[in-house]
Structures are given as C-alpha cells and as structure tokens.
Amino acid sequence: MAQKISTEELTKHATAKDCWILVNGKVYDLTNFAPEHPGGADSTLIIILSAPTSQLTALAVITKYAGKDGTMTYNTYHSASLIDKTLSDAEKKGDFDESTTTTAWLAAQQEAATPEVCSDEKPDLSAIINLDDFEQAFAKVGAKKAQAYISGASNDLLTLNANKSFWQKLWFRPRIMRDVASVSTRTRMLGCEVFMPVWICPMGIAKTAGEEGERALGAGAARSGIVHCMSTAASMSVEDILSSAPKTYPFFFQLYVDRQRHKTEAVLAQINQLDQIKALFITADLAVVSKREADERIRTQEITSVYSSQEKSRIDKKGAGLARTTGGFIDPALNWDDISWVRTHTNLPIVIKGVQSAADAWKAMEMGCQGIVISNHGGRALDGAPATILVLLEIRRDCPEVFEKMEVHIDGGVRRGSDVLKAVCLGAHGVGVGRPFQCSVLYGTEGVETAAAILQDELETAMRLCGVTNLEAARGDMSYLNTSELEQYLPKPERQPWFAGLRARL
Ligand code: 173
Image (cartoon, rainbow, N blue to C red; front, side, top):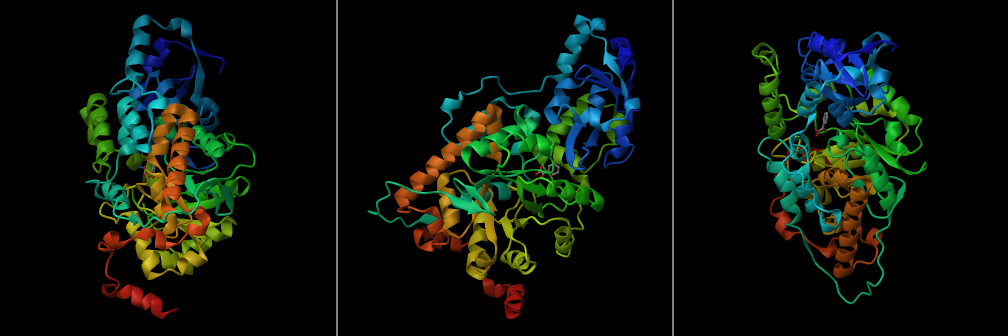
C-alpha cells in the first residue's frame, strides 16, 4: 500500500459498481463483494465478508459509505484484521492521505457515521439491579438499529411475550426450617464445572451492543463461572473470543449449518483444534430467517434515505432486516439424517438447539445426541411457538426418559434467578440467558459480570426461601413446584397420535 489516496480520489469511487471505502486509515475497493451477497450480484446493499474460518462473521452496509469513511460502522461489526485478511492485494488501494481532508469533508463523514440514538444518558451500572434494567438501559442509549436487531422478534411477538409470561404461571411449593445458611449452586453442564447452571446464549454481532462485543461475554462468563456459547454469526473471530478468557476456560460453540456444506466442515475442523470448546449447539429452529419487523422498519428507513429509486427496486421485497439479509447461508434442508454427518466431523457433545416439542426431544435422544436446548430462538423463529417452559413440562410429562439419557437445557424469557430454580426443579441441566447479557455488553465485561452476579444472587435467595440447599440435588425434584396453572396449557397427550406411535416402538 505505497500509494497515498486523497479525499478527491476516494470520492470518485462512490457508487455500488465502483465502491472504494476508507477503513482505519486505509482505502479498500469493495466493489467485488457485492456478488457474494445471498441476494445475488445485483444486490449491492449488503456485503458479507466471510472470515478465513468460513464462518459468517461480518456484515457491512457498504453502499452508504462508498467514497466515504466507513471506519466507525466497520469497527462496529468486524474485527480490525478481518478486512486485510479477506481482501486481495489488488483491492487494497493505498493509505489514506490525511493531509487532503477539509473541515467540510470531516463533518460529512461524521454525519454519515453517527448512529441514531434515543438519548446519551447512560444509567450508572450501580443503578442496575435486575436483568430488565440492562435492556432498559440499552433501549435508552443504544443505537436504534442495534436495538431493533437485538430486542426484535418475529411478527406479532406472541412467542417472545409468552416465553416471559409463562415463567410466571409456574409456582413454587416452598419448604421451611431447613438450615439454608449455606447453599450451593455449583454443578456441571456438558462436562464443564460451573458456579451456576447458566450459559450465555449465542447471539449475533455483539459489537452492536458495545465495543468489547463477544470478548466482554467471554471474559464476563469466565469471571462469573458460567459458560458463553459463542455464535456462528459473531462479530469477532473464534480465537479472539477464546482469548478473552483464561486459556483453559470452557466455551460452547453454536453452529448454523451452511448450504455449502464444505464451509460447515471447515468450521468443524477449526473447532476440533480448539480445546476450550466443549460442546456443539446446532441451531435447528431457524430453517429460514423469520420476519423481524422492528429490524425491517429501521432498514426500510435507511433504504429510503440512502438509495435511488432504481436501487430500491432491486432490494429484497421480503424485507431487508439485518438477520434476513445475513442469514441466507443457513441450510433449510437440514434434517435428522445430518446428525451422523456432523458426527463424522466432530467428537464434541452434540446438542440440538431449538426443540419445541416432546416428539423432537425424543427424536434427539433416539439419534444419540448428548443434549437438547428447548428453545424458540427467543421468539425470533416461529411466532406462535409455545413458551419454552411449557415444552419443558410437556417433555417431563410425556417422555421423562430423555432426562436420563441426555442433558436438557432451556432458554427463552429467563430474567430471574428464581426462573433458573424453576427450570432445574423441572429437570433442566442448564439455562440460557440471551438479550439481558447482550445488552449488558453496553457496560463491557463489568456489565456482563454484574448481570451474572445479579442472577447468582437471585438464584441463591430463591433457593434459601424455597428450602433448597443444593441445586444439583434438587434437579428434577418437582415437589418444589406447583405446576397446576401451567398444566392447563399443555396439549392433551391422547390427541397426539404421533406420540402413541413413538412410545409403541419402545
Ligand atoms: O436470531 C438471529 O438474529 C440469528 O440467529 C441470526 C441468523 C442469521 C444471521 C445473523 C443472526
């Protein structure tokens, strides 16, 4: 990169068909990335840069920054080294010539890059006392686009809301006078020793919530004795995330199976080399990316303000939300027979994430999986899918055998330590918490640690008040629960012929 590029030169390449962008002091030609977009060569709205790991790691709205400084947005989504690793030498046009900038040019760049936020009054971390407070803090100061992506869910948010409210239909039956001076929340999840049975759900692009991104989740998890399940769609490389925690600290890895199966095989080969990764969570509830309207509306506004009517006409009519435009690589053909293919590429415990019925819990057990996550993707997959706690109760009622054969985990709407206790008493080995941790990244590693400490404290308090001294001993002990309200919502087993068929084969 010997050549110096002036603002005048950069500004000449300001269209989708000839698109130079300034990133971290260097000028790059991103024109050729348009064809990589799942929408095809004509769709110049988004690029997806595939990291050397073949993992989907990054996304940028490039046309907006054609001929401009895209540094701020690039750094929100990508690790610093990714662009140099990904582009060819011919696409690295040269160092930017700072001496050619003018006040007007700098002001224009600033305006293009500044994210729209609601307020800049970030609440002090000490004012945050529960997990909802993290989401509210993020709603206050987070970039609108990031909020729409993180807090958003499918269609009418039926499942998002049910996930949360159904925890409140499950009640305790507390015991008293049991000497709860000392209680233990320690247990094992998928072979990992943890302070409490909580893992951080895999969520895409954590840098949208805060600069430290997934490194805050990794470091915060390690300091709190819980596990971070990293996402295929992370905004940092796997190695970057692992290095945020001590060398032997465990992580889980979430996998989306790619339509191009060789890419998934390459990811698995990479994961196999990394001793810190202890389990593979295969996401199975998002065969196609759902309709996320908050996300789509933000994108629509952006499109309206930035693109010409000719460009607009080429944009995907099915909605251009962040997940939809990046999720085209997910293979909708994934099916149960693929478990044996995954098995030939990994020795890790295989956990199927996204089980929403007793029938599929049973199926996963039959296929020899080591675990399941009862999940509906935090209400971000099928709207109208049942609240996850209801599915846990259904599995407990209809096929309790699965708890003996594999680990049963659950996520969706968990906001309190008492929810963790409820899940464990129903038989869960671990509980995933998503959005509150993602929002806690607003405060970096300290925020993630604070979120975990709040959960730990609430869990211990709930145990003491319920007469539970040892969480592991209470696993599956339904004597601590009153399930009668929740049971009213269970589907009647006799109306389900599939289940009689499955059981008959026992
Ligand atoms: O829920 C999501 O947003 C998600 O899982 C996803 C899917 C594809 C790309 C990015 C995120």
